[in-house]
Structure formats: structure tokens, C-alpha cells
Length: 140
Image (cartoon, rainbow, N blue to C red; front, side, top):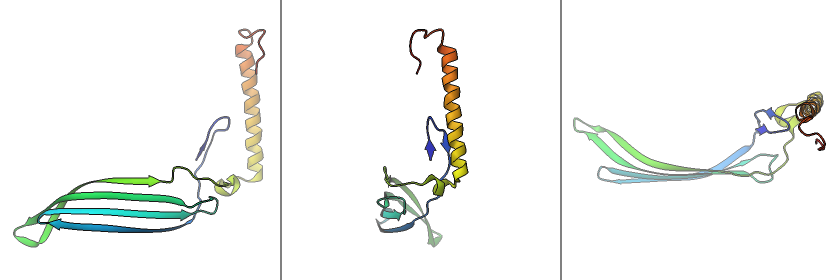
């Protein structure tokens, strides 16, 4: 997860949940031609999200099976296919940064203090750089 300006914090979240799903595979062939299709749908239930996170995977493959004349029990299949992976594009819920990232109340205060100091430095720099250029205009 990445929080942007005016706060720049990068961290990884660990939010465990139970995953349930189902899927099916259909395969077959005629002569040396082989075809297969796959569908999988999973739901991950995370306590901090309002609805479960949903994932869908659909793929299809077709190919050619080459048999070895001297070894009839052996063969090799060359497949070509495509896959679609659909992830939940939007999740909503409450995320407590203290639980997700492990920031303590002292850490929160330090982040807030650094952010306020950073904003003050930005205002000073802005006035120094634009002061002469922007004379007569209010500097925000």
C-alpha cells in the first residue's frame, strides 16, 4: 500500500482472511488435438472489508499431442492458450493502520510531528523562493 502526498508512507499489509472457492476443468481431444478449459472463482473474507474479495480465473488451451513410436506409453503435448484473471477492482471497509502496519501511538505522533515540520519547511521555502517574484500576492 502506498499513501501519497502530503504524507509519503510505504508499507506492506498483512491482513489474513479465509478463502473459499470452486472451480472446474473440462478437457478432451480428438486424435492428436487436445483442448482444455478452466474456470475458478474464489472469495476471500477479510474482517476489515465490507464484502469478500472476489477473484475469477478463466483460461482455455489447445494443442497437439506428439507420441513417440518406440515408447507408446510416453507422449508430449504442446499447448497454446490464453488466461483471464479478474481481481476485485475496488474494496471498501475500515483499515486500522495501527493493526495493519504495527504503528504504535508513539509512532503516529512522530509521523504527525514530521508531517507538520515538513509543511512548515515547505511554507518557508515557498516564501523564500517566490517572495520577490510574488510581491503583492498572498502566498498560501
